[in-house]
Length: 199
Image (cartoon, rainbow, N blue to C red; front, side, top):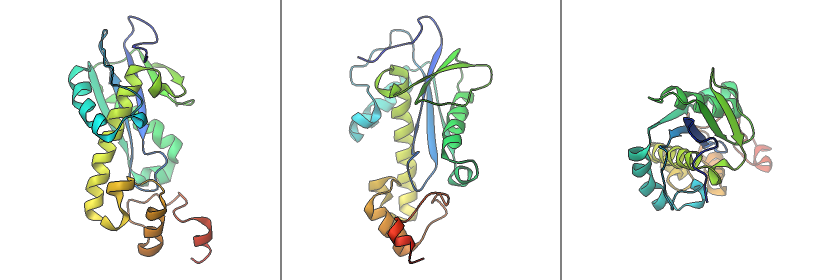
């Protein structure tokens, strides 16, 4: 059973990111403030939901939330500031777009760079514990998947419609055969170590 809040009566925003472990594409994060009394049996950590369920939940979350927003950090920015800082920045960008200012942030994970003048709590596996983080995980994942589907149309040879930029065998094979695109993260190990010996 996911918890509706950490502290009753406080405006809390759940935050989560998607795409941190990918070789290609931006990292996305979402921030969601749910109303008191929000209830949804189906809502869970987005990784435990089917793609169909995530897309069914998205309009419900967007309709019911007091406020929600999505933040994006580009592959070029990821290469400049590293993926951990990029994940924090994506969350910051989501929070700053919220129409209602939260009093506290619930962050999925064990680390976060404090947002100016808003307190936060890091919750490991928070997307399986807190409703607002689970809602943020669904939005971050579905918006990032939409974005990767668009990139797939531009570069179909990397099968981003299936792997969404994650380091699958097929994705790495395509990089070895076709090289990297402008959407690939240059600071990531794009090829498996044994392949990179032949560069």
